[in-house]
Image (cartoon, helix red, strand yellow):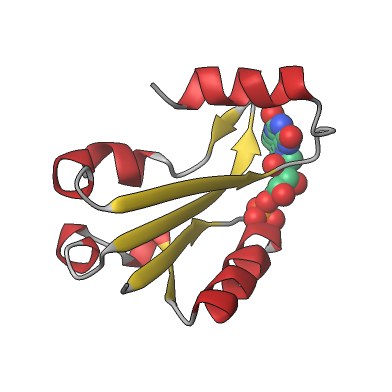
Length: 99
Ligand SMILES: Cc1cc2nc3c(=O)[nH]c(=O)nc-3n(C[C@H](O)[C@H](O)[C@H](O)COP(=O)(O)O)c2cc1C
């Protein structure tokens, strides 16, 4: 399965984790700003990572605005943040960001 790990990172934590995931999966890795619809088309699986920002997943709009072409692929999303990973916090993040 051809996989792209794409991330939005401001201070580097999400980028580091994206690079670790890509290394384990033998996947390509790229910053979200450098990825457009044509590049997403090349992959069977897209892993997106962004930092939490006021409970929103920064950069997730890349996935949402390209959903028509991604919906038949495998898509995974992760987020980094400073909040403790309590279940109510995780539910709030899911509710705010995912349908
Ligand atoms: C303005 C601002 C808002 C943030 N909001 C959240 C938040 O709502 N939840 C959370 O867990 N972390 C929050 N954080 C922490 C960042 O998500 C965290 O430091 C993240 O790992 C940074 O990722 P980056 O190094 O890839 O930019 C916030 C940080 C900043 C600066």
